[in-house]
Length: 187
Image (cartoon, rainbow, N blue to C red; front, side):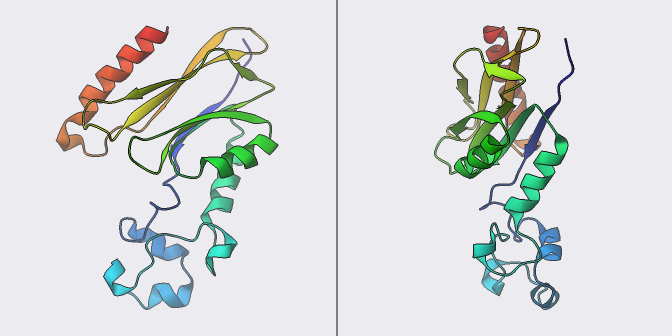
């Protein structure tokens, strides 16, 4: 089988990469604004999230272009993105680069998981499957897609998921069990 590259990362959705949670984000704001603030809360007037596109106003960079450049630099044949709250934008932009995709939103949220694959290397071999984790309810999910490698005709099961962030809550172990059951069912 020929080699292929898979990438999976959390893009911190455009409405989630905020300076309230990620204090290093101040480094990417206009210098005059970043240097005047020590209180990184919304109440202090700090922006909720970083600029996504040039239309959002002045910024040292705009996240969509930076993320797209980073994703393209990976030169991956399969790309999994989580906290994806801008699927249509990525589907359009990566589609122009030769990718097909599938996406499912997280239950009750504005983001979800997406799987993109290079059309010249893979094709969808079956419908995608969604797993909504039982705990915590209506919060996390996994997306699974069986792809067929064009050159070898062999299947590849790709899973994109975002496990619960808090290890102390104990949800990750149960999510992992559910995920392994899904993989077992699909293979």
